[in-house]
Length: 303
Image (cartoon, rainbow, N blue to C red):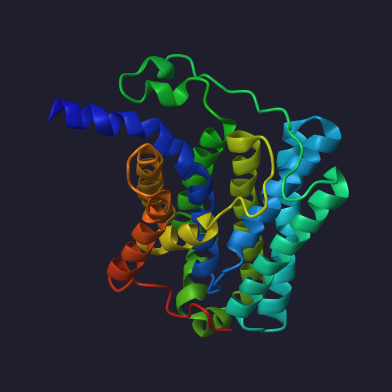
């Protein structure tokens, strides 16, 4: 029993690190879908964020500027998606797929333009780690507050802010009303289009921020298609989490745990192709089992 507990405990720091980009994007998906807009383009927005963070750091030598550029680029891609899906009422799924393809092609070309390489950028300096005095001495979880990434603290703040915004403010009440009964909300004088624009842009910025974590914290370099399905995992985490910001974070931890198990299996005798499938098979399983038990916003996808 004790050995099993220690085994789970050894996975905890890795699971948290792997969950950060998925959780940030999943909260973004929650905001977008609560407003009634399906944002399939989160995968591409993460990719643009990962690239912009490296490009910004490359030109300035400052990773903080890289984070800022990632958020700005996410805002611009989100604006394009919102313009097509909200103003011009194009099919949201098609628009999202288009954003994903555009991001993949654009980042591939820009690597060649900036670094003159195929598929991989140059190396960039890492972000400094942060230690929280006293909290770093706590048993079991103390390691989370020792030389920890700034993204971990950003995720905690975003999660708390999102919960307060969604369930303790008038804006959150209107957001949930728009997702369920947009006609009734419009009749009550709620500017639906403005709200949808705002929350789609917020979801794009959070997705880009999540993508920047992959390049700035995990690899210190940008590699073609390095997001590798995490944007879709974030959408699944949003559904599994019941379209709730805290539920999305908890679901992201479960998906990240599946990824941590995959890493732990790399030295086993199982063929690598099957090991790579573990987190994606788990995501499919969760979607099939829990999709029917979760209640989506009633007007999701309707314009």
